[in-house]
Length: 307
Ligand SMILES: N[C@@H](CCC(=O)N[C@@H](CS)C(=O)NCC(=O)O)C(=O)O
Image (tube, rainbow, N blue to C red; front, side, top):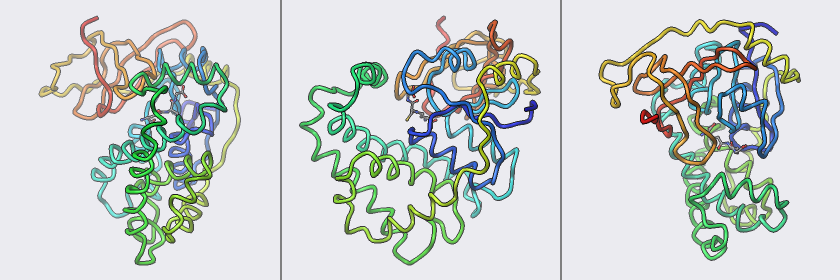
């Protein structure tokens, strides 16, 4: 492994990991895989990120990229062809992240309601802490609503595919397919009733099979210690970039904490290196990985300055 190699820290059961896997598939990328646990504690991942526990996380040398939004942009810049944005609507496809998150929510609610009795106590305790905004004890009562939301979003996809096209934007797969596919992959594979709920949407399953067939490029399993060592031995080439119109007036070197705003995946403390409208990157330092730059999108991430 060298400092330009793609190292994905992930577990495959995650619908969000599935998004990155399909991006790697479109790119036909050769990449290294570090498997992380599904629940806390995750000391190796948290050492790398400086506090973020979520999946997926992309490491390239001493740069760490958090969230599919940021990962998509990094993969696109390092491997431009085939593009994740084949029709050119790059920013509209990036904006789809919030639609995709809205589509995911009813799937998540259904999973908590229908599957939590099968979960181990450790897994349930972990997920309760991860999603404090969800009332696990009353969620069952809202199942009809969750089903209606999942079906409504899925119907849009079915209708969009109904002219016989192979993918959502035409004959070539794009980030739109990836954002849409992951929710159906997750709900169908964990809850058989979803097949019944969507059974009249004839265009969905063949399209899901086409998206699944994109694959994941070439995976090379690697030990987390080797990934840590590579971070330690590498120096990030990332240059400072501060937007003079930044909404929070952030400045280079300022100590901040960056945290997801939609679930408790953990915050990262560090000094600001990049603060633009759609990126926040901080320099983080610890004994395990030395100095790394941790990059986040700005959408759905809160930058705390009151430390
Ligand atoms: N917006 C994030 C969401 C990531 C996310 O929520 N991942 C879930 C996995 S499905 C997670 O991290 N769960 C907690 C955990 O794995 O520790 C992304 O696209 O990367």
